[in-house]
Length: 443
Image (tube, rainbow, N blue to C red; front, side, top):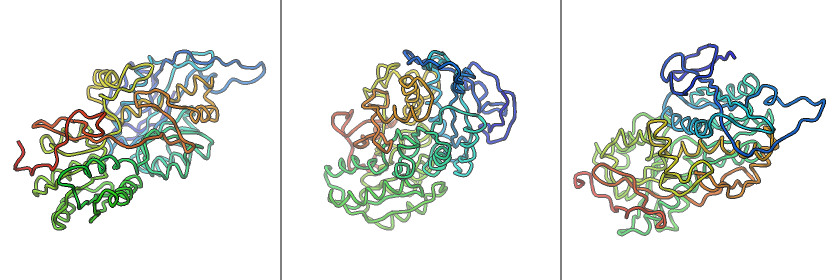
């Protein structure tokens, strides 16, 4: 099969694509396939018969089930995309490369494209996945605007998507449930438990600042912080607004220092600016009583870049290996994490756990439906109630959003900072350090 594709470096290439034994065999080369033949196993699938005289569906005729995806594989979100892709590939590895639908065991093809975090390009690639690549299932990209662009095209073709890369309520309002199902919680609940935890500390923090980024999900996080703070006895005194791809965080740190008497800073953004912000905070001797690094402090790139500068930084998390969730392939989250590290060479974050679960939900729905028909799959997804997965029990509301009550609170502790869960108590692995000592007093 011939496919024009975009490789990891973003360079167009055209080649005849043949199956390879491992997805990562040509990482970083111009010959790397973004179109990957794979296969996956799903046990116990419902059998479906074909009536005489009726044409078999496309997947039955061609003998494969095809998954399609675009991600920002280059640019500021390259590291995050690596985590998402590793999860999609983990599902491929875990289920042994065969998927049974109806009475047939089928190979699976993956089509990956680089959408460059560009909504217009995402829309073009989604249309290509549907009309040219003729994928059966679409898994989500990363970022609110790109997910919405993907969903808009899918809606036009009466297709569904399952995504784990956009927490904004805009997804629910515009395409949720009818077109798009979302495996990540709504952005408004991300800061909830972190603020509740700090409100119980002594001395109680009073003055709160936020760093907000130009993305709907990040804006909604700040909106929820501003709304929640008064009920916890805190005052929101400053918000610093930044482009998503901001390169220089020194002005933000200087502005926080000039404001004075900031007790808590909540950082809403992604891993690259978080690294830069914490580096500037250390360089400029800015040490509030708590910095909450948001939901991306667990990215391996953050610890690798910051080392001991990450010490005592708070964060929130959607998933950790020590959580006790399980699915039919893994006895718990640690078993998933161990296999991921063995296969991929690095520890998974919540992104990988989410993205691993996305194609598995398609697999489960298709098993029960006995077809890849999108309307049948949509109904099966809406009917899911506390389905066990290593991401946690999955129940979708009528807008296709997974139900969630908030994000556990973490802190990086020790000379070589290690992640500890500090709240809620039933998940805690250590007591929190608060107020955080100034950098000169650590060690």
